[in-house]
Image (tube, rainbow, N blue to C red; front, side, top):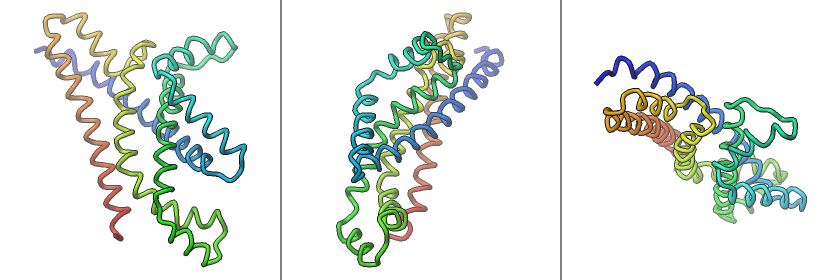
Length: 214
């Protein structure tokens, strides 16, 4: 198995995959919190806008969204780099799912906690920041962890806009070493498994840290 020829290419691909995954996760988590809080806002404009975003991006195919952002936006005079198109597409799509996790986790905080924070004469913003959201955050961590693993797996779609990620590099290697196809894809599976395991371990450590008081 000519690993010495493959590893530099796979390492370069892994760097792109991790870069896109980390930047997409930042966009997705930001959109999750904004749209999740917006969907339960008392202000109709924020509530309707947030729900429209959630419904639109949950219904959209990620691959079609990626093609639209990268290939269609230039016709409107907006030309994004491959990395930026990938980050925006994946981040906005996954963020719509994350918003529902944020919304449901906040709704799961007991009514008594809301009433206790009101009794302490806290403002609505203080109640959310100091009492409700910290408790909801501990609840949403396992679901957000699963979502981040889905996000990682979604990055393999950027192969279709010829961004040189892990999948793209594996396909290049396969073209040159066709008879080694099973071994090449086994390496690819192992690489995604290792990255997903790192996410799982990180989320479990975070979960342990935020639930230590229970």
